[in-house]
Image 1 (cartoon, helix red, strand yellow):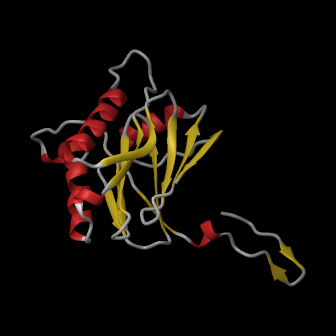
Image 2 (cartoon, helix red, strand yellow; image 1 turned 45 degrees about the vertical axis):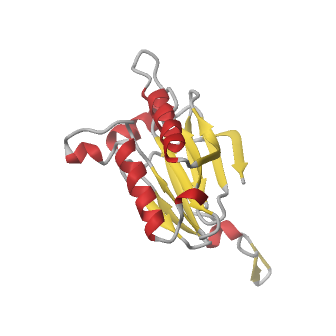
Image 3 (cartoon, one colour; image 1 turned 90 degrees about the horizontal axis):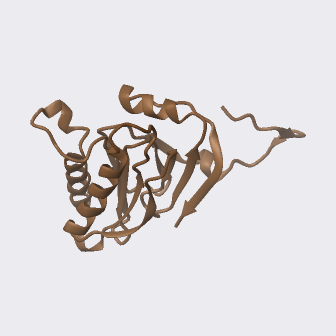
Length: 194
């Protein structure tokens, strides 16, 4: 909750970000919008989020996946990159996007805990290869590293903001296991990509 101070009988004008609609994306989810006021958010550790849009159709979306490949188990399939990427692309195409105009930003794929399989690297490698195989332009983002990330993405404009998560990366890892948002402190490294 943000408290806004008032000056006399008038309150300060609201920031653009306060007026925006927000949708938080968790593992296995995807969301597509053509609303210029919409911002999509997610928290990532080793997971990857693909932010894909068609700038001419004015439609874009985000997904969030936990593992690169797919399993036979339908419940597990939701959390896998192949499934998540196909769902996002199909929804974009239904909304008027054209494959040859799509552009993507990829985020996530961190290695949060030493000694475990580097799932983040596998996710990042999968996402880049998927875009290449589908002929989708990879125009930015941030992959790999050792920190979780908070991502904000405006699907119509393609603007993206990343905040690296410091000390509480263990909570992001727990979030990936428990599939619920984690509260965390934000590091000083905030980056906006246009």
